[in-house]
Amino acid sequence: MPTDVESWTSEPVESTQTEVRPEPDAHTETADVRQQMLALKRKLEDAAADVARVQNTVASVEKLEQLLKQGRTHLQDLRGRLQEMSADRDRLKTEIDDHQIAHQRAVERLQEQIDEAAKQAFLQKTRAEQLVLQLEEREASYQQFADERADERATFERVISEATANQREMVQELDENRQQVETLREAAMRAQSLARQIMRAHEETVPDKKDS
Image (cartoon, rainbow, N blue to C red; front, side):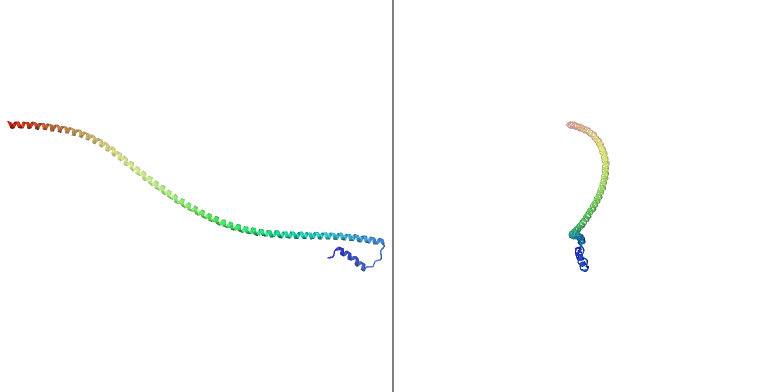
């Protein structure tokens, strides 16, 4: 692509080849040269500005390329991190699923233990109620037995009291009978003594009659 300097330098050549101008005087030639120098200076300044813009554009492109490379590197890093995060997510999901399964199993085991404990508690409550009924029955039986024994004891005490009274009466009667027996024994002994005396007297009397 031709620059402004090249286009400016080529234009006077073409004009000199095609046009035939009369020779100017010295003052006019100096003014033309001055104008040409000013025009050349402007074109050089424009060219320098264009070069600066091109350089800035190249620098911007290089910077953009560098930024693009950095962006690609960052994108690759992000992709790597995304893959790691995806792997971590899958691993965490697997761990969460395993924890949920383990938790569900633990809950099921705990529920089974609770059901078994409730069953055992119900059985123990039933046994306790049965024991309470048995104790109440035994207490009622014992109370009945105690009442019967109390009645029997009262009857026995009454019988003992009556027997004691009868025994006293019998002892009194025995004492009286013993006194009567003693009296009769004494009377019998006296009667025997009297009979012996009578027999002796009779025996003494009988020999006397034989002798006479």
